[in-house]
Each structure stands twice: as C-alpha cells, then as structure tokens.
Image 1 (cartoon, helix red, strand yellow):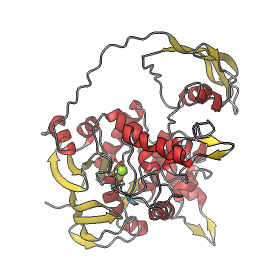
Image 2 (cartoon, helix red, strand yellow):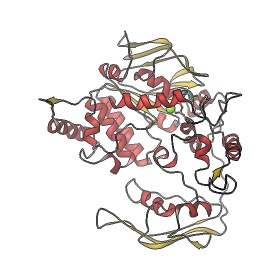
Image 3 (spheres, helix red, strand yellow):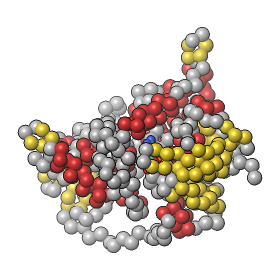
Image 4 (cartoon, protein in one colour):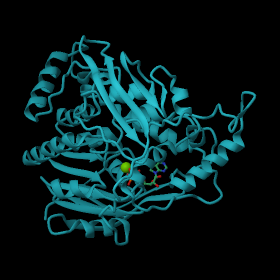
Length: 451
Ligand SMILES: Nc1ncnc2c1ncn2[C@@H]1O[C@H](COP(=O)(O)OP(=O)(O)OP(=O)(O)O)[C@@H](O)[C@H]1O
Ligand SMILES: [Mg+2]
C-alpha cells in the first residue's frame, strides 16, 4: 500500500516526559485519518513534529515512500503539509486577507500584490463554501470563522496534507456539521487529512481510519467503520468505559439567576445585539442557551458577567439586582465564568497556575494582608484545587513562568468528558510553577507558524 505520509518510530522527549515514545502513523492519500488519545497522550506533539515545530530525537518521516527532512514549518509547507492548530495562530489586528498571505506574500517592485491575493482568497472561499470576508478584522470575527481562515491559509498555500488539531473543541454543533462537510469535500479533491480529536462520534462520522495513542505510546490503527465506539474508547483509556451518562432528573429549587428583558445595543449598528431576553436559572439545574454563533450568545454572557453594559432590563443574582454591579462584585456574589476562548479571556498566560487560580479572589483576606499577597495561602489553595480537579501541568522548576495554563484551560474539558485521568506530576517539583523552556517553545511556535 502506498502512503502519502509515513511517520516511523518517532520519539520526542520534553524535560521529564516522553511525549512520543516510538510512535508510527501512516496516512493514505484521500483519507481522513483520526488521531485519538486522552489529554496529554502526545497527539499535538506528533503532529507538531510533522509540521516541523519540534525535532524528534528519533524516527523517520517519508512522503510518497521517500525519506524527507522537516526542520521548520517552511519545510513542511514545501512538502505540502499544513496545520490548523489547537489554538489558532492568527494576528488579531490584521485582516483575514493579511493573515492568509502572511509568510507567502507575492510582491511587484517591492509592493504587495493584494488584489491578486484577494481574488484567489475569494475564489477559494467560494469553492470550499467557507464564506469568509477577506476584509474583516480577525478580532471582529467568530471562533468558527477564525477556523475557516486557518483552513483557507492551508488551501492558499496549496497544501495537500491537512492537519486539524482538535478542530471542533470550540465550535457549535452546526459548525461541526459544516466542518465535517468541508473535510469530506477536501478529501474528494484528493487531499489527505489528519484529524486529532477525542470525540468518538466525530470519528465515526468523518474518519476512515484511526490511530490511537496512550500516554505517548502507539496503541493501534483501526478501521473506523468496523470498530465500535466502545472498543475505540477502551483502546484510548486502557480499560472499559461506560459511554452512557447516568443522569437523574433534576430537582430544581429556588431561583438563583433571574434575567428580565435584557437588551444590549450594538456599538456599530442600530440593531440590538440582544433584545428582551428573559430566563431564570434555578438551584440544581443546568440551563442551556442554544443558538448559532453570532446570534447574541457572546453578548449575553458579557452582559451577565459585567463585561459589557446592559441597555435595558435587569439581572438578579440570589434576589439582588446586579445589573450595574462590577465584575468583581458579581464574582464575590458567587458568579463564575469559563469563557469561550480561555486563552484570550480566561487566563493570564504569563502568570503561574497558582496566581491564575486566585485572579478572582486575590483581594480577599484569605490571600492578602495589608496589600501584600499571602503566597503560602495561594499555593496551598492551588494545591488543593490541583488535587481535587486533576489539573495537569508541565514538568516545572521556575516560579515566575507558567506553562500549566495550557492544562488548566483544559480542566473543564476533563470534567466534561468524565474520563478518569492521572496527573503526570513529577514528585518533588514545584507543581505551581512554569517552565522557561516550555514558554520559550510556545513563543517560537507562535513565531514560526506566523512565518
Ligand atoms: N513544549 C512542551 N514542553 C514540555 N512538555 C510538553 C510540551 N508540549 C507538550 N508537552 C507535554 O507532552 C505531553 C504530550 O502533550 P501533547 O500536547 O502532545 O498532548 P495531546 O495528546 O495533544 O493532549 P491534549 O488532548 O490535551 O491536547 C504532555 O504531558 C505535555 O504536558
Ligand atoms: Mg493537543
């Protein structure tokens, strides 16, 4: 069998951990090949090796049977390999078009040929039903659209091997269906797709074959159609998993949050972002707000959490009017918020894990005295949460820098999947700290990818 890409016996180590331990993966032309594994299984690392972001200690990469050497993303681009990263790498104050051409700009007498580039982007956008506006600023578009820009970046570069690293994590169900259609369309054109996910339904829906990694090791490659979800999940976690969620009917009691006629004006147009939205959330229930991205969900969350002003209407928390209350006082009153984009709005990536955990309460007597932070209390508090919620972090040795943000940002996902997982804590190391090398790597990753 001819493979378009073969990754053979890849080993990639980070300080204190073997992220890929003798892993092999073979991609057929025109297939969607899923890469399945728990958090920290080594999926992103393996794909970053293929994309030239990491150099493995051992292993060979072949394209169409011939050994190739990939030292950086420019090399991978040369071999037709493109990647949509788990956390998009777009320049927020650039337009869609500027982002797409970044690194592959064509010029005439030193002047950018923007019209030509725009024409090509519009053509590609129409051909693949991506519907992006080339002149929109990245900071103004939705997460779903940002992803389409990343896809366009690969198509613009005429990549034929497309890597999608957890592309559905931040998408709505409708956007996921659209993405699956786009992926299928791409494979019909002869492109080959590597699709990282831990959602079994998506694998069943779109993938042809699936390679499973566990704790950095290669487990198996299976044919998706003839393998049940139960078997796949067992291969992924190494034991039997009950995929049915046992859910007792809720027994809601008193109203905790009451929203009445909430209206939020748009800053840019005459149309309201929200008009007369009313609902209640009771103690003991989960209230779901459904809708397609761009229809006011973001504005609703911003209004509820105090990030933006309310034009009309009221919000009550525990019977107290908080419509005009500050963000801090809402937090003190018991409101929490896991934002859509946790890297942008939920965490301070240069802070340690411990500092991030007290961002909403560092000013309380528990964590400060006469304006000075009580580091011991902060560390004890973070230790407790690390234990309780299985927050995972990198191997660490330096206090000031944080890398654990990445795993912290995933803790909600761990809870959602309900999959049991063990922290890869290094005994004897200060688990709250960051790792200089990791931060440096992340920085270089961002830079290299922009090039
Ligand atoms: N640059 C880095 N420096 C140090 N350790 C790293 C680095 N990148 C990844 N790791 C570690 O290598 C292991 C594999 O990480 P990787 O991100 O590849 O996992 P993953 O399967 O993509 O997980 P997830 O589903 O959470 O994205 C983890 O233990 C992670 O903490
Ligand atoms: Mg990953």
